Length: 628
Image (tube, rainbow, N blue to C red):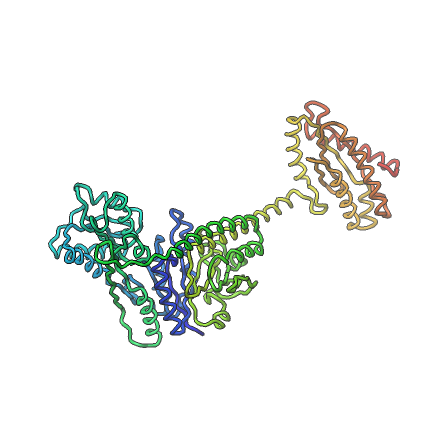
């Protein structure tokens, strides 16, 4: 059995994650490991339940069954996720665990000398440019590396005997939303711009550059700017932005080698250090190291984004009427073609187990999973109903038949309710993008809607059984009384006529005693079918007792009563002729219009209809005639 490495990483569509994961996949394949990346797309604004659903991905694997584990903690932005996975690893992991870029005393570490790089950047502005007016934009001071990078800036400034005042430092959030606030803060109490602004990451550097451009400030002639991470956007920005490149490829490769060394009993240091490099470009005036902008590539990216939006709308529309599993999986198969994966596996929780242990399994996964679909390179769905243990992640036969691979594992969840996960394989030149998130959200939403539809359908069935007669399928007494109240409220407002018809089958006891109860039941059903066929709009029929029926007639005038009586007598005779039996097929009836007398109550009307029916029934018994 091939060894497995589990990687826990957020926002895998981002550039840093792509570079490091591709490096991990490459080295793991060389050493014959399968790699499973348990992905999340991060928090959903203020929607805590959705964030919990994303976080649930850490509960998919059995940590004790993995041969190696890597954690990129700095990619998690969901509250509590870092501490939860750390505690889980301490309790359950039985293999080497490697943390990337974050120092953990209990585990192996691949760390980057972030501080040295920030110190080198600060010295570059002081020594190579002769600057002394240098501002700093920190990352979040609650993050792992935010305070460290800031402290290295302070150390160099102190070393160079350059005072750092309050308005030379602004706390950012590692994103692009605070450029204006930062520049406003730096400019408070001064007339000239600082000579340089050092940012703790590239996203904040971009926000600073955009704000300076908006104010008409020239970069680098008036202000120099630098970032950290060396993402593609800063290389293509105008002017290209000086940054610090972390050795992500080396980091991924080293992490795999640490695991392989430990698994094979070779000596291994607890911490491996890697040093980033300064990438000097136009934003500090020291170089012209800029990526060539491929216009066709950019246009293609714009086209893909627009197409993904359209496809998301189409997919949502098609899901709206897909309540059966076969229907929504057909839609899922159709729109998977927008994801450039070479193969995909849809694994859903065992529904029976999920319902049986619903209280315990919400926000987690069933022990038994069901492989529902395998999608090949052409995104054709192969139907499966293969049950397997979740600790395998995928059925062992599939992993055995494939060469060593790098798999992305995405949770399929509605808020914090976990329905399963989807495993995807990507070729070297392809990678998941934000459409994957949209696709999985759509799939999870339709699964939830289908589950709700099943529950509602069950409730409707219960409600139907509550109001319907089990033998004949027409309304029972409860259903009759419900509709009677409703029509009674309407007839006065609408000025129509509401009539109650009391019907009693003649000779039911004789049929039961002489031909059996099944024959008697058939006679009751035949009478019910006749009544159903005679009902007009807003009219109903009901079986309210053994051989007792009621009909509600609702019409513009009294002619409906006579019309019904004639139709009923004719239909009974036609049925008797159509289905000859060794007994007469007859019924007695009486009609009372509640509109006849002002103040007549519903109960009085029903009693009067009953009285008229019994008069006719008595006459039938006395005369034993062949017509009602």
